[in-house]
Amino acid sequence: MFCLAGCKDTDNGISVSLLADYNVDGQAILTDSLCYHNDAGNAFMINEIQWFISHIEIKNEKGEWLPLNENGDIHYLEYQPQECNPFHWQSIPKGQYNAMRFTFGLDEADNKTGLFSNPPESEMFWPEPLGGGYHYMKINGKWLNSEGNLVPMCIHLGIGQNAQLTEFYHNHFSVEIPFDEPIGQNDFSLTISMNINNWFRNPHICDFNDWGSGIMQNQSAQQTLKENGCDVFSVSAKSK
Amino acid sequence: MKNKWLFFGILVLLLGACKPEQNEYKPTPYEFNIPLFFPNQTSIPADNPMTIEGVELGRKLFYDPRLSGREIPGEISNCASCHHQENSFEAGHPIAEAHHAMLPLVNLAWNTTGLGWNGSVNTLEDMVLAAVTAENEINGDTTQIVNYLQASDDYPTLFLKAFGNNRITFKNVQRAIAQFVRSLVSANSKFDQYLRGETQLSQDELNGYVLFVTEEGADCFHCHGSGTGNALMTTNLFYCNGLDNTFNDQYDRYSVTLKSIDRGNYKAPTLRNIAVSAPYMHDGRFQTIDQVIDFYSDSVKYSEQISPLMHHVMQGGVRLTEEEKTQLKAFLNTLTDEDFINNPNYAKPE
Image (cartoon, rainbow over all chains, first blue to last red; front, side, top):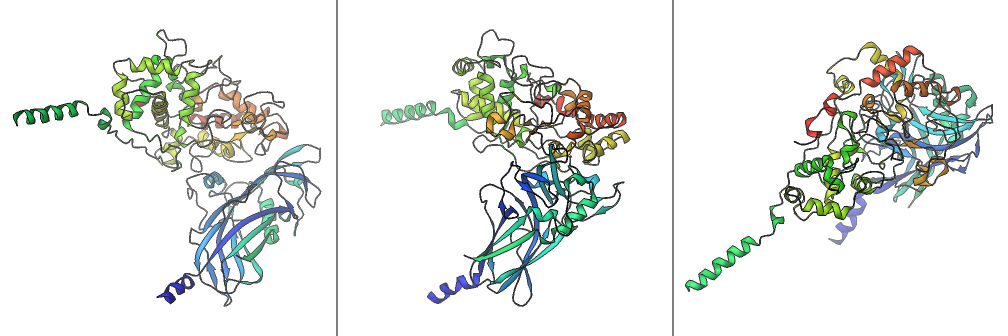
C-alpha cells in the first residue's frame, strides 16, 4: 500500500514551467527610458513588448519531440516589470530532455481572425485587409531619428502583404534551442530570453531611419526581422 | 383547549403579518447576450448581478428628476439631463460645468480599464455616486435623495423587487443605475450587419474601412479596433494622440498614474455611434467628424509624450486625400446603430 502510494508520484511524472525574460544585450528592460542603442547606432526606448509563442515542445534522449500543450498550443506573453506567473505543465514523463523548440508567432493553421475573444490576446488582432489573424509580436517604443527627434517605433510582426494587398506572406518561424545539459529527472523550469537588439543585427543590421515608424505594410522589413530572428532567443533550463 | 388553539391561531397570523418583506425577493436574472465578435468576458461585478427588476429600476432612476433630491429640480437633475439616447447617451454638446466633454454610455459592460477620459473611476457604481454628488454635475445630497425616494409612492416597492429590501439605500441606487447602464449595448450598426453577412457596404464605405485598418492608410485600428478583431471599436486604453504639444490639464491620465509618460494621455473613446456623439476629443474641441479627420490627417502635433502608435506624427498626420477623407467618413457613418439610439428599452419609461 505504502509502495503504491509512493510509486504514484513517479507515475505522474514531473512538472515543467516556462518564463519569459527580456533584455537588450544583457541590459535589463527599463521602459520609457532612452537607454539602448542598436548596431546601426540608433538610440531607442521600449514601452511595451507583447508576443505569441506557440507549439512548444521538448526533445528527449530518443530524439522524440514532446508537445507541452496541456493548456493549449498558443500562449500570449508580455513584458512585465515584476516576474509574472509562468506557464506550467504537469505529468511530463521523466527523461533526459536536451532541447526545446517553438513557433515564434502563429502558423497558418492557427492564425485565424476571431481565435481570441478577450484582451489582451484579442487586442493583438491583425486587420483582415492585411492578412487577418493576429500580430506575432508588438514592440512599441521610440527612437531618436537622424534629425534628433524622438519618434514612434513600432516593431509589429505578422502576416506580410504585397502593395496591392492581394498576396500574403506568413512570417512566423520555428526556433530550436539545445539545452546546455540534459534535464528532466526532476521538475524543471525553462526561461526563454529575448534579446531585443538581436532582432536588428544578424544577419541584417537594421537602421530605423530606413524603415520609419511602422512596418506592418513593409514585407521587406518583416522578412528582415524574420531572418534576424534566428538568434533572438536563448533558453535556460534549470532543475527545481 | 379552545383558548389554546385560538392562541396558536393568532400566533400564526401574527407571524405571518410580521413576515419580513425580504422573503419576497425573487429577482429575475437579466439575460445579457454577448453579440458576435464581442469579448465574452464582461466587467459585471459579482456583487451586483443584473436582474430585470434592477435594470428597470435603474432606468427609472436614470431618467427621474427626483434623483437630484430637490423639490424643484435644477438644470441638471438626473443622468438623462446630459446623457441623451439620441447621442449614444452622450450630451451632444459641450457641458460648460464639466472638466471634460462627455463620453458616451455604450457597451460599458465590457470596460475594464476605469471610466472617464482618465480612467480615474473604477466602476459604474462609483461613477453614479461621483456624478450624483459632484457640484458641477447633479449636485445632489445622498441622504436627501434617499429620503426623497423613500417617501415616494413607487420607489420602496421597486427597490424591494430589485434588491429585496424596501428600505432604500444610496448603495442600491448606485447598483440599479449601474445595471441599467450595463444594459446599454450597441451591436447592430450597418458595419455590424456587414460583419454578420447581412448587408453590403458601399464602395466608399469599404474603402474607408480599409483605410481605417491599415497602417499606411488612416491607421485608426490600433486604438479603435476593427470589428472582427475588436468589436468595441476601442481598446479602452489611454493614449496621447497629438492634439497638443504641451500639457497642463490637471485631469489627464497622469493625474491618475503620476507617470510622466501619461501626460496628455486620454482614453480612446469608442467610435460606435460617433456620428451622433459630437463634440469630439476630451475637451470637445471638434464639432464635426470632418474636423476630426482633418486633424488626424494634417494637424497632429509632436511631443515626447506622443503615443508610439501615432506613426505619422512627423508628417503631421496620415495625409489623406480629400477622396480618402470622404471614404473614411463614409465608413465611420456605418458605425451608427439606429436600433440603439431608438431602442424603447433604453428610453425614458412611461
